[in-house]
Length: 115
Length: 110
Image (cartoon, rainbow over the protein chains, first blue to last red):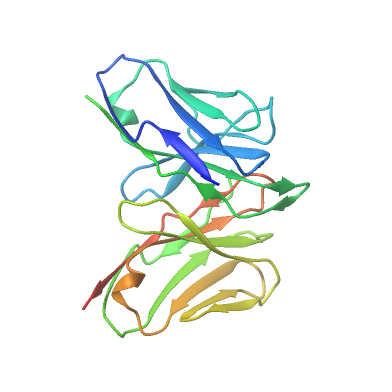
């Protein structure tokens, strides 16, 4: 099993450019997440998807859109990149069952720089 | 929203010394998870605590959940250079979502 995979690993964008970060998991997890991590700020939830076909905003959703393409894939789109979006982006997935939450599995991250 | 505060933000120790990081909440937590992130890496799950007063051990690591389920701690005995990284606690009280603390970054001097 590959676990959680993310592409690309690194990306440099100019202000105003758009891009999509891809994430896929092969563990048959129903829940998937996008986080950003800034120095000293911990992990902040951007969007999450509790199941295929549903998405919800997290703590910092402005400037981002997501798409849960199927159970395996959850993409994050920046429509018009801004320097404030320079960060490391992590995708994660986990099994959830009712109110029970299990451990999250994280991808290797995408290091994004916006100039 | 729900917040978990982690202290200290940084901890520098000599190899062989002990280390403790604390996670505190103003409200009752349903359960708490701990993760470790090595420099340049991604967070990796360590453990989940669910019951009031629960104590779990993994070799040199001891995890505790407070009696009131409002705080948790991670203690490492006799640190090694392999322990370096950032340790995060995560609150899972909101079903399906996690709120992470800002982490404690541990450096170990050989």
